[in-house]
Amino acid sequence: MPDTDAPQPASGPRPGAAGIDPKLLEILVCPVTKQALTYDRAAQELISEKAGLAFPIRGGVPIMLVEEARRLDEDAGSPA
Image (cartoon, rainbow, N blue to C red):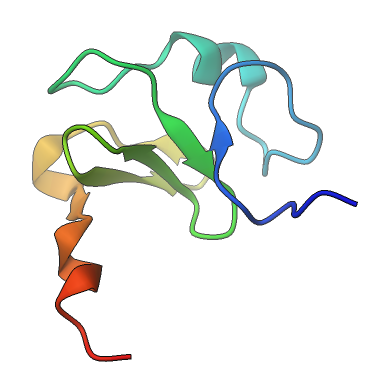
């Protein structure tokens, strides 16, 4: 059985995508790199690996503002 909490490509329909319209996820791109995003259902974020940013999803609405994004390298410096 696949791990449903693992990040998934933002393209294609995904059942149970927490109310996010799959068509919306297909057309959203990173505002910095203009590349496809990866959906992380567990964290409710859209991930841009190339930009190193995670854009939050609040109330089913992706917040595509760089000022609101979490830097992915924030996790790298934290002790486990």
